[in-house]
Amino acid sequence: MLLVFAVVLAVAWVRYGIKEHDSLVLGAGIFQVGLGILWTVLIIVTI
Image 1 (cartoon, rainbow, N blue to C red):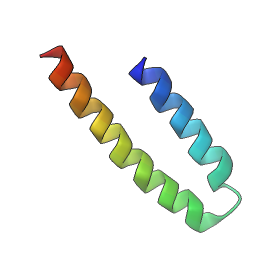
Image 2 (tube, rainbow, N blue to C red):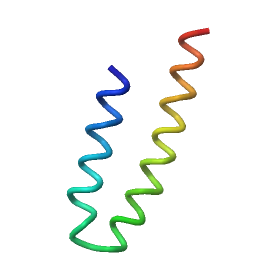
Image 3 (cartoon, rainbow, N blue to C red):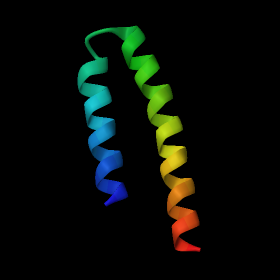
Image 4 (cartoon, rainbow, N blue to C red):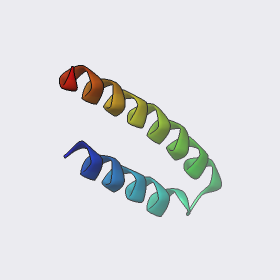
């Protein structure tokens, strides 16, 4: 479930970010933060 969400988020950022370089950089940063949060939640739930 979380993996699917992460993939969709990544695709969305890449698709909309390519239009503007700044948006791509910003999107990549937000995606990394979001992915980190998702992993943290996943670890907490697993434990």
